[in-house]
Amino acid sequence: MRKQKILVLSFAFLLSTVLVYGQEQKQRETNDIAGPSSVGNQMKSDIISRKAKVGWYFLDSLDAAKDRFYDKTGFKANLDYNSQIMGVTKAIGNNIGASGVLRLYGKWDFVRRGTPFQGGLVFNLEHRHKYTENPLREYGILDVGYAGLIQSVYNDDKFRVTNLYWRQTFGTNKVVVYAGFVDMTDWTDIHAAASPWSSFNNMVFATGSVTIGGGYPGGSLGLMVSAWLTKQLYVVGSFTDINGKATEFWKGFDTFFNKFETVKTLELGYTPGLEYVFFKNAHLTFWQVDKQTGTGIPSGWGIAGSVSWGIGEKHLPFIRGGYANEGGAFYKGSVSVGYSYNIAGPNTFGIGFNWNRPNPGIFGDGLKDQHSSEIFFKWQVTHHSELTPNIQLIGNPAFNSKDNFTTLFGLRARVFI
Figure 1 (cartoon, rainbow, N blue to C red):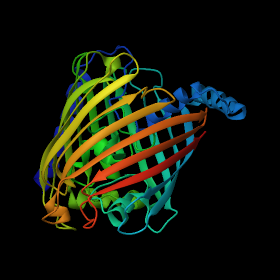
Figure 2: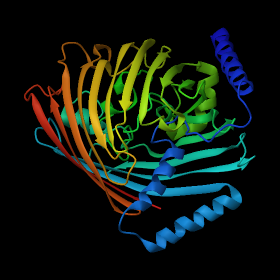
Figure 3: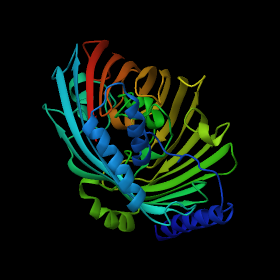
């Protein structure tokens, strides 16, 4: 175990050192190789949302004041409240589920701000709570009978620290390092329509198509290094503590250094240009997770892949999938295809279809393959509010022995400043 720990830490140090010294000091501005739910990209999306036709003028003036404050101090924070309700036509439990999440997220860039070697803190503090007996994260399994996550972030954790890490750039974002309490979904298997806050709900259309083991830890101690190898090729490597808990993040030092059970990822990607990383992207993500001694979940490995290729400025078809060999992944195999319209704009439409095979090591033997689809439309009501009606169609829900088909209707609302 000690040799493994030394090997991983040494690899991370050498990788970051080689990449840093391999880059020129002056590079053009590029996008972070991070998903739409990451703090930085969520804040960028909040700015784009000001294009809505109806404004809240007091909050618009507050936006301008926050921008001026950031120019002077390097500090900026946003606050939002998210709520969602879902109802199912054929349930094994409750017909209705609902949850809410309050978030305070932001950044403080105070080291060499505005230079190629900018550094600063990134934070995301949340309060996740349920309105009904079961929060939406558990509602899909317990009430709908679906082996999976019809919504991945609406649980009942109460107060949690999802992000609290240092972000360091080298060569104007040609190399970026995250170190601290991180959320591995921020950079793993990136996809423009993968945000559970603003696009698809079902996680089969998000990180790894639910074929990555380790439980997708958030608020866990970890390290991520991303780098542009050329103008078309990039690489992202990481390792994260699988025993960390966002609700008790301070215990992460103990679980990380004493147990040292981690999930490791390595992503290799291609895009025709640095500015197209989200809209014309093809990549493979390899992962490996250690055995979890506390739960007895075995070690495992797997691969996830994605191709999303924008047509014009508004059309984004995609195909994604993955395979898992143990490791506690929900699915042994999963494939998703879909399409989104105007994914970077204030109003967005999306449709997707998925096939998956539940992992018998998690859910037991004898379960049928599941099929699901989802349609959503995110409507930007004002500069600072969104409404997203959505429908999920589920075939062969694994734990519903009476019905082979059920329909979920949902409505998601978000207000942010």
